[in-house]
Amino acid sequence: MQLNIKKKNYYKQSKKDIDETLKLNEDLEIKIDLTRENYRLVAQRAATLFFVLQDLTSIDSMYQFSLDAYIQLFLLSIEKSPRSLKLNERIDKLNDYHTYSVYKYGCRVSKRESSDYFDLFKFS
Image 1: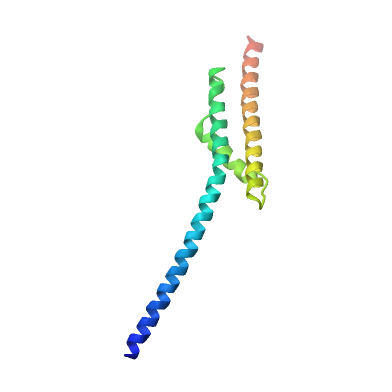
Image 2 (image 1 turned 45 degrees about the horizontal axis):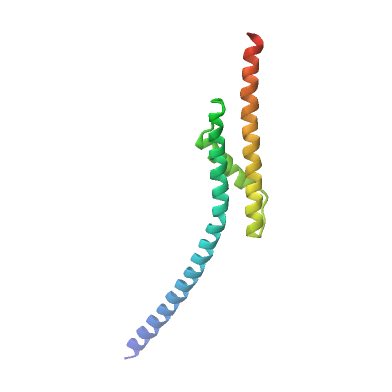
């Protein structure tokens, strides 16, 4: 009889622990979902900037950017952009930093390619 009471208490405590853990996990899932939704703005901006770079090839074929290079640029932006404890500030800073990085990247490629063309014409 004593053993059955101990088992019953053990199962009650186990159920209570499991219920608490499930509640914590549900709360955490909600927080993660909200954060993910907020970062969707960053993903939308990054996708738009990538396709802007890709559209430059319709102006001149020298403007060609690989997805792998763009992903590396984006990861670098995540790493180097200013941090903030406030999520909205972090998102704004990340978007601003990455937009400027893409601009510099596009200008650097443009300048490099243009100077190569200039060198060709210079020696012709």
